[in-house]
Amino acid sequence: MYKILLIDDEEIIIEGLKKLVPWEEIECEVVGVAEDGEEGLELAHELKPDIIISDIQMPKLSGLEMIKRIKEKSKDTKFIILTGYREFEYAREAVTLGVTQFLLKPTNLEDIKNAILEAINILDDERTKVKDIENLRKKLYKFNALSDVEEDENDNEDDKVRFLTGQAIKYIKENFSSKLDLQTVADHLYISSWYLCKILKKEVGNSFIELLNEVRIQEAKNLLTTTNYKVYEITEMVGYSDTPYFSKTFKKHVGITPNQYRNKKWDNKQKG
Image 1 (spheres, rainbow, N blue to C red):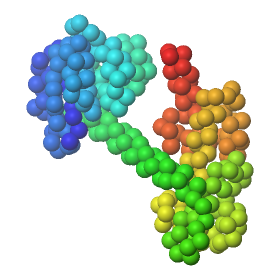
Image 2: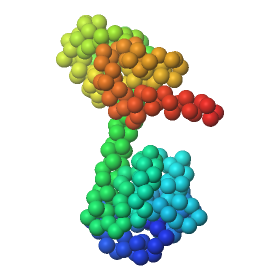
Image 3: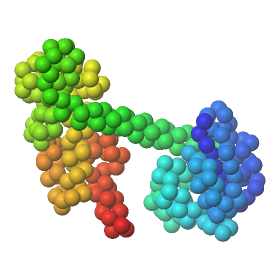
Image 4: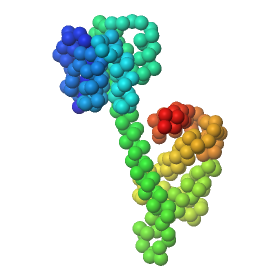
């Protein structure tokens, strides 16, 4: 169940949302309600909701200021604004804060339900992406161990597979910046590309391309934070020939674009 926090200084709005939205049908549960921004901030930190539906103009702390403070500690929470204020500046700031939907009162039930479903879809996509990347990185730790494996005199098939996988990983890590493909690595190991695919799948559980991309992205992250090379230069340095494809791949693995990653790391250094 997705946890929902409702924040509005109008009791009739809170009660209407609690009673009219088919929460169970969309696998959601209202875990708390607040009547002002300060109370909303406290409950958000305590309950860690997946989605917050909030007004803008509220006592003590505005909805937008509250969102800013929540996002400082919780990057995953999604926000839906439900307000009677039509000022463009509010909408623009909401967009800047990454608010999922900006709904104007009075709003029909279907629009509210669709806004919640959109927020859920975004959450699911982000969490799936993070899980996939975490799984791949766990396997990379295994690669590091495998790449250090020395050839065993034992003629056991499992030992051979582990050794060949380790050598393949080692070769990828040493040559990722060149135009590297499956056949090149297979030729280096004097085995068929089919057999290389098979042993990588058995030992690592991922394809050659997935492994190569992860090694390249790790080096790109290093270059983005330790050098002043432009993104298109780093693209070539880590083995990609197409900058848009590199940026897309980087975002898939890291969750943000190369420039956003560089700026974020730079901001953290400045704060530090």
